[in-house]
Image (cartoon, rainbow, N blue to C red):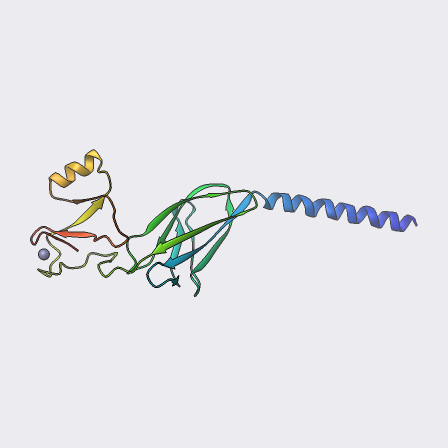
Length: 173
Ligand SMILES: [Zn+2]
C-alpha cells in the first residue's frame, strides 16, 4: 500500500513537470498559409516564404501550402517571392500564443517580371535602364528622380508592374 502511494506521488511529479514544459511551449505560435495563382486558380509550389526579422523561412509544397512553426509572439513581416510572379509580396502578420495565423497570398504570372536587371526590349541594352519606384515618394526619392536615377511609377495597380524604365526609349519593362 505504501508502495502504491509512493508511485502515485511519483506520477504526480512527472505530470507536474510535463505540464511545466507544455507551458513553456505556449509562448510560441505558428504561421500557416497558401500561395495561390490567381489566374490559374491553384496553389503554387516552391515559393519562397521568408521572415526577414528572424531570418527564417520555408518553401511551399506541391499544393502551395507552407508552415513555419515555433515563432515567438509578436508582429512580423512575411515576404513571398517567386521569379516570374511579380515583385515579392510583403504581408504583416501577428503571431498569437499557442495558435496558428493563416494567410493566403495571391500571385499572378508576369511576363515582364524579373528580379535581376533584364535588357530593354527595344534597344536591348541595360545602360539607360533605371529602376521604377512605386508608391508615395519620399524627399530623397524625389531628388533621385530629378537626377534621373530612378523613375517614379505612381501607385501600384496590378501584381505585374514593370521594374525598369529605359531612358533612351522611354518605356517601362
Ligand atoms: Zn531602351
